Image (cartoon, one colour):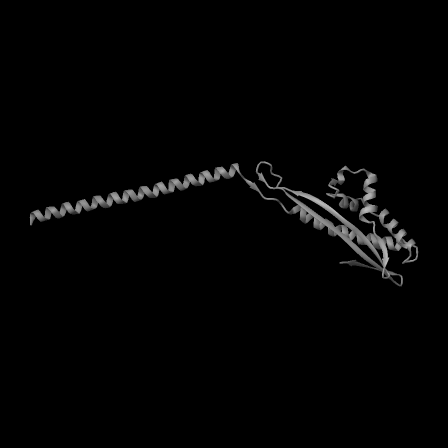
Length: 203
């Protein structure tokens, strides 16, 4: 009986030593895993600091759309004022010529600036143009076409191409600039009922 009790004690203490060794190993694995995760996160953060990517802002595009809306409101108002100043008989060649002259002379500096801003013609920026070339642009490109058709005066703003370079503005980070091209034009149909002019936008 005494011998068997001694063997039981030995067997019991041996089992405790095995479980203790296994627990230490598991704890060591957990510590190593956490350490390696920490190292990986640190390396990632360092790489991000050195290689930051900046997003391109769409703000210039939104501003262009807003400015176009404002411009077209002014354009339509100027059309009406120019019609009311025209004294020739509606539908005649003299009326179209006088109206166009009144309209061009009424273009404000803000309207001209909008038309010229970021405009590219034959791959040349309007920043390089002199005053004579700018005047020719308004008369012979933008507002060149005006004619009678079906009892209505067709007044067209010719196609204008604008080009924007969109960038993040942060040169310390990876930057992917986007070249944004935009073109717009508008045709107005003008008719007269009695003494009132009716201005419609053609699709």
